[in-house]
Length: 253
Image 1 (cartoon, rainbow, N blue to C red):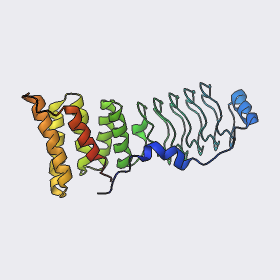
Image 2: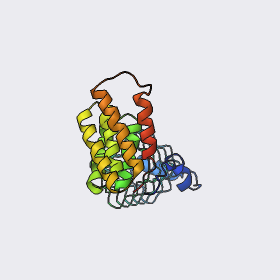
Image 3: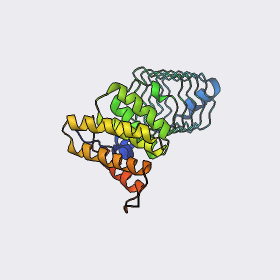
Image 4: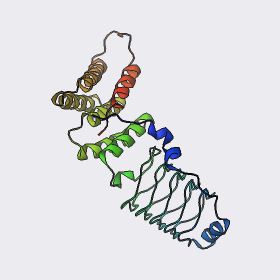
């Protein structure tokens, strides 16, 4: 399998966001007064907490704009460029994002339920505790990576939801099931974690991945220890899970 270049999550905004011009104050004023600003130049605009529900922002250039906690519910953002924009905690419920570019956008804690994601570009890893992204038509790879992000943020139930969606697309990918097993282990759902880890090991065995087989067995051993406590072997569960997670970062779809 290919290597998962997950470190890209830390450099993506820099890599994909070229230098952009400052905001056009006339366009900012037009937007705030009328909520009508098609094809406007709004790069790097300070629009945090702005009331923009139902706004017409078709084709607007919002690269690196600060839209943190802005109300963009039902906004028309078709074809808008939101590359590298901050949408932390923003309300995008029902927003039309058809053809919009959200690469590198910060969607942490954003609310996107009911948004239209047709042809939306969502190459971003800043999605912790975002709501509504499961409706986005993205690849199993992207769903898996989002699940990993949520797991790292200890949002294990959301991580499992992303892994479930990824598994629906890639039912023969052992990395998905082993990652889901870790999330379930963290929730102390040992029976389901054991089932996932066992299935992952079966898949890795059939694919000739000794690394995957070994990682699965390490987790199965840890689950067995949790179910049948024995004298401390000297390794903490945290260290073992961290080691398994490091192995999983090697897998790519």
